[in-house]
Length: 222
Image (cartoon, rainbow, N blue to C red):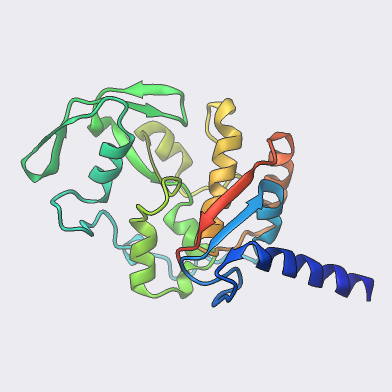
């Protein structure tokens, strides 16, 4: 009985942090805001075995021009994250500019030297829940401009080193960025109501133990 009471209290506490009060999904309705300390945010994520069965990168249509302004998702992120704004020519062709690659703690002076990384890779998203989504939901995930943590411009070398690995297999080479990376990983999984596998959960639990237990605020995307 004590276990059931504790579990009920935990569910109630999570529900109280969701706006609006009604919830369509396990964490809340699309557009609801969830705010939790980092450690509690991690324990809120469901734990489930992952499966890569049926995955194809083409299942996630990406780099679309959602607002029809001539600039696709990649260009929008590059413009937003530039520390020195690039020049924009016809067709949203970018030249000049300067960017900070947080994974490697380096500055880059050419957009062509950057990859746009899905912080939680497309394959990882598929493995942890997106295989059951609609094509429209996967497209929205692949082009998520609604949360600055979802997509990040980084050097091509670090992005390709990461590939589709989760934090159990890869962390950015720049160690002072680890806590931010882990918090953003958890926030992205919360935003899209994705699961974690046990190895991922164990790695995250250990890794964030030395990180500030600061609140994570997320607007649910689905």
